[in-house]
Length: 126
Image: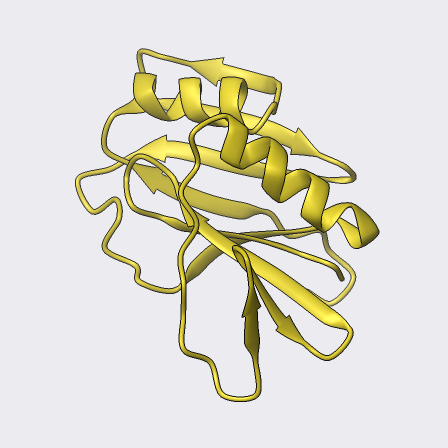
């Protein structure tokens, strides 16, 4: 039923203006659609989309909200985000080790960070 349909990440935020600054200026996303009055922006990310919307429940999900597979550019992406003030999360995950801000699991590498609402975002070598 849904296996052949596109899916998009949906991320709730408390402060829509702060979220737009973060997603656009820090992460470098461009809004495909944005409506400040309704507190909704849609960003194109490769062949998919991400919806960012204002909600009183923003930041209550302690799990990953959105993931970007950046391949071999992971360390460069992490460094570029760090240069823009992004702080990375550190998790004690069995079977992994930390190399700077990057979690390493054999050939798979990953880093997690939060947006201004506290949503967990993820970049990885996948």
